[in-house]
Amino acid sequence: MVDPSTAWDTWLQVVWTFLRLSLFSLGGGNTLLAEYHHLSVERFGWITSSQFADLYALAEAAPGPSSMIVGLLGLGAGWDHGLAWGLLCGVSAEVAVLLPSTVVMVTAALSWNRLKDAPIRTAFERGLGPITLGILFHVGLTVLRTADHSVVAYLVSAVVCALMLFTRISPLYFMAVAGVLGAIGVIPS
Amino acid sequence: MAAELEHEPLAAAPGRKGLFLGMLQVALSSFGGGMSAWSQRIVVEQRRWMSNESFITGLTVARLFPGPNQINMAVYIGAQFRAFAGAVAAVGGILLVPFSLLMLIGVVYFQFHTAPAVDRVLTGVVAAAAGMALSMGFKILHVYWRDPLALGLAALTFVVLEFKGIGLIPVVLVLGPIAMALYWPRQQRHG
Image 1 (tube, rainbow over the protein chains, first blue to last red):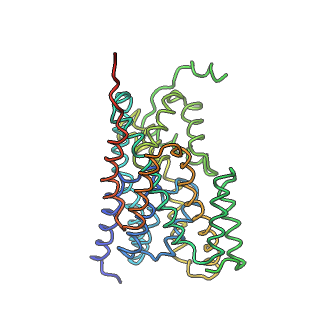
Image 2 (cartoon, chains in turn blue, green):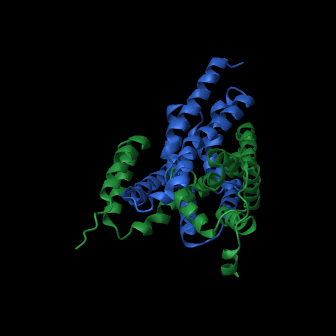
Image 3 (cartoon, rainbow over the protein chains, first blue to last red):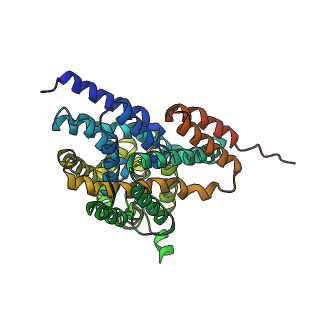
């Protein structure tokens, strides 16, 4: 039986981590992925690097917003303390990451039209775009380094990246095909 | 046809329960993807809660502010009618089924991921997902292609994160305001 005091510590760690990151999820939330990896694998050791890659893929493949990966990270953090703690940490993580951004978004939804001509609105709209762009390239490389451990895997990622950019095929097909390639042993793990 | 629809009066403002059920319908309809198209169809065309114009404004605001786009859109819709309580009801509706399903998938994963067959399949799926992550930056690159200042800021952000090992929060807190100052609209001079 795991010491409950450490389970509470984990829960607090999870809630605080996602609460403070919430307002930094620019560009639709994907900008936080590299930070999630850093914190959950390197800083807190909730999960391993390869588990992180797996959870990211599951969140992308499952229906619904892929930002729900936060729930899976919480689940992984609490898992060592048992199923109930895992689920509690999973739900808490999701609530924590959504709460601050929801409060801000409610304020924005109710006041944005009044700010129509304010210079801060223009500066905000145009200034944060380039920052988001820089973060997204960092996130892309971080996920790539985490996920791929062979030349074949890098090749699969590059092909999927190109297909994402130049076709409108649903990414679910790419994941299905790559899953089959993995199953028959084409991609060394 | 579409023009005629625009002039039809909107429905009565939904309550918290209505918002929850409406967003639940959006979530269930969009299991194969295309959530914002489904939410437009259901919220604007079927339930007639808001005009198409205010829906589009919502999409812009949702993309601009921190938080996942699809969830921010639910917040926007809920907040229009019942402020914070409406936002919570709408987010609950949109997340309930997919989040429960994802938690179930997660539990199965942590139970069985050490099985070699599962591991091999995931190696492939993970490589594909990494390709998707890599495409995110390239996808919006064209927007900034003719703007050297934007490319410079993006490059600086990338280099600081990638090579200096500084966390995301300090980087955004320092570079965000600098970028906003650089893009602050200049005073219009008259006469």
